[in-house]
Length: 161
Image (cartoon, helix red, strand yellow):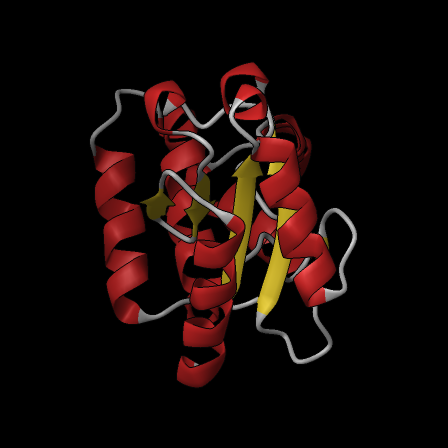
């Protein structure tokens, strides 16, 4: 196992997470979350690494990666835009907001712009039913979205690069 796959800090956090559980296997999710936080997605190399680190077969790690939608199985853009299209957000324009993001960025669901800045996907529920339409962009909830606010956000993110 090569520890060089991750930074010293991420590796330290992974090992610390493993120590928090009575069974090493129980640390699969926090290890994958830390891996994704650093790399942006869960690659086959990361799966092998996590398997060896927590001491479970690779198939068990793959089960977690493919079951939980929070894990990216391919590289994503710098701005990972998850638009809630479930019933509460849909009733207040979630589908329109999702469609507007896609149209403005020239993307279909789960695609990434060629410059690697944006990935857009619709998600079923982000548990913010009172503040829709909303999106989770990286780790930030952006609520009460309008098409005008989406335009402003895209411009701001493009300026930041």
